[in-house]
Image 1 (cartoon, one colour):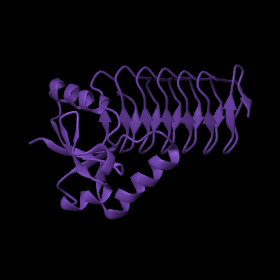
Image 2 (cartoon, one colour; image 1 turned 180 degrees about the vertical axis):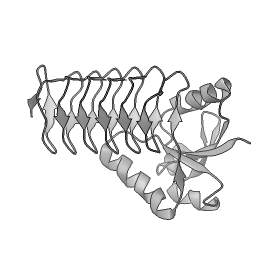
Image 3 (tube, one colour; image 1 turned 90 degrees about the vertical axis):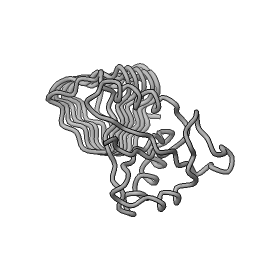
Image 4 (cartoon, helix red, strand yellow; image 1 turned 120 degrees about the vertical axis):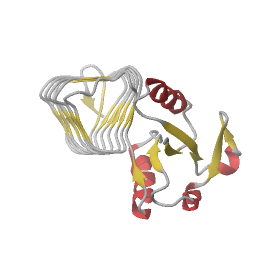
Length: 211
């Protein structure tokens, strides 16, 4: 029997193809029940052929055990945390949505993670809960990613890096080995990080500088 999936955020159609690829691989069957979005009044009733069920409170039409959730909202860490915690407080369950072409052998992972096509995750990487690893992003061996992190498209985290919770890593950024990126840091697109980053710091440039 197919898992019944509700998608939070009607903004990226890539999630539709990702689910199609999972179903085609055959190890898991998922049916997208519909999307939830706070901009329901503007978006209307449909998102690329799937129903927009309504704003977030429309989840109440489903029992806690009827559906699983995935959050595709990734515009900011704050919005991702806020929306995820809303559903967690109601008691709903999240699932991992991982492209079947991504090798996760020897990878330790929590729940609610979204890992897109062509991501490269080396052995003995640890990923927490509710993270996004974008297309063509790489995480090298023995690195750890804490909860609610966003790893942008084409970015690369070298080996033995520690990423604390709620870190945003922009498109094409590079983080050199054995560094620590502390809680709430933001790494700008295409930046090269060659030294530790402290709590809440914003780093931009090549080499990266605190802005």
